[in-house]
Structure formats: C-alpha cells, structure tokens
Image 1 (cartoon, one colour):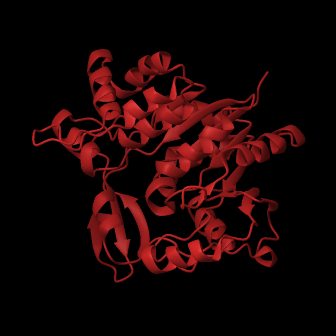
Image 2 (spheres, one colour):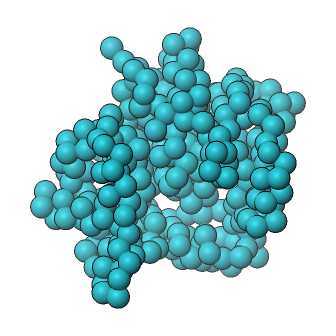
Length: 317
C-alpha cells in the first residue's frame, strides 16, 4: 500500500511540489488555503458566495494527468472588455461545478474525475466568510489576503477575522497521514493560514506522521526578508502545536550570479542561506534543487519528488 502524504499550502509553490511528487507511488492528499480574495478569485467569491478557487485550480492542474493543452486551457485568462475579463477558465469551471454539485468539495471531486487526478484535493473550508487579517510591523491591521500582499510593510503575524469551520475530510486526512508536508510558498499567506486553525493543529498533534518542510529558494519581500533556512523553520514552529518540524528539504546548489542580481534589484528577493549550524534539531535533506531554464528560479520538481519519496522509503512513522 502506498504511503499517505498530506501536503499543506497554496499558490505556485504548492503546485510545483505536486508536479514532481505525483510521479512517485504515493497517496497524495492536498489541503489548500482558500483565503485569497484578489483578481478573478475575489470577484467570484463576491458574486457566487464561494471560497477562493485560484489555488485550487493550480493544484488540480499540477496533479492532473491529462494533455498539457488542457492544462493551458484551465489557466487561460480572458482578455476582453466584458465581465469575463481577467477570469481564468479553470476558476469558472470550478465555480460552475460547485454550483451543480452543491459545494466546492463535491465540485472538486467531480472535476477531479474529468482531469484524471493523481491525488485528492481538499479545500481548508467551505466557509466563504473566511478573511485573513495581517498585523504589520507598525502594528497596523490589514484586512484580506490581497491587501496584505500588496501592503509595502513587513508582516508581523496573521490571523482570521473569524475562525473558519475546517473540512472534516482535511482533519481525517491529517490524522491518517504517514507524512505531513508544509510546502514551499508564501509563508504568511499560503502556509500559515492553514496553521492558524486550531482544528488543524489538533489533528497534526494527534497524527503519528512526521512533519516535513520544503524550504523556499529565495526570500519574499514583506514576509521573509533576510530569512535564512532556520528562520523559516522557527517561524513555522511558532505556529505549530506540540509537534514540530522533524525534517527539512533545502537547496544547496549555487545560483546563477546574474539571475541572483536580477532578483535582488527587480524583486528585492535574496537566496535563502542554508545555515546548518542553526538547524541541529531537525534532519536536513539537501540537494541541487534549482532549475532556472526560463530565467526564473524554481524547484526541480523531479528531484524534489525523489527526495520526498526517498525519505518515505527510509523512515517509518
């Protein structure tokens, strides 16, 4: 029987991790943050009273085993002067399927069959009132994920305006997991939104699974400025309960200096330094994990998936 892996996160980082992991014989369940309220997703939330679909769309594409052209179709955004402008086709399909089946979870299950998904996708909550709040470095309060990410201030902490009702399927998956993975991605707006739910932390603490963190390659302005690898671990551990991160996957490959400089000047992002001397309490897995063929730093999805699978083979719960 394949090992059960539960991955928590959202955004591009999560979809990147899943693209590689799905090529290995593991039972994947993804629990996706649903507090995004910008662009197409935000408009659909307001109009149809549903949870955010943008990150769910990306995860479905990442786990799908259909033709690449179909993935391109789901990500296609209309460019027009009508109300369709800016909407992604996949967001509209998810909205329609949720309306047909009765809720987003059922809609995802139905669409998963069409997309021949290699894994399960569970939204954190069906509660559309879910609103992420940010406390900034100057103690000002910002409401909504989109506004938090656009604020030119450093985030001190995040919380929910009202505690959301967490999916029962999500809780069950975590309790039965062989490995729980906190995905790379926007740490305050994609990963921590899952960890500020008391029910999620309680489920993690009651699980026999180890917790793994896949560390970001570069820092993110406003969220992890000047962060080293240990800073990521310490921040996430502050939001976790009794159980802490046992193992981390880190890049140790040297980066293209010209591309590093471009990131520093154009996006204010720096490489995350692997400070092994400050990571003595966890198991370190390090590898050459970077691909930059398109001029963008990304994790090598196959190498990442292989490292996760190798860990599963060599460790018991």
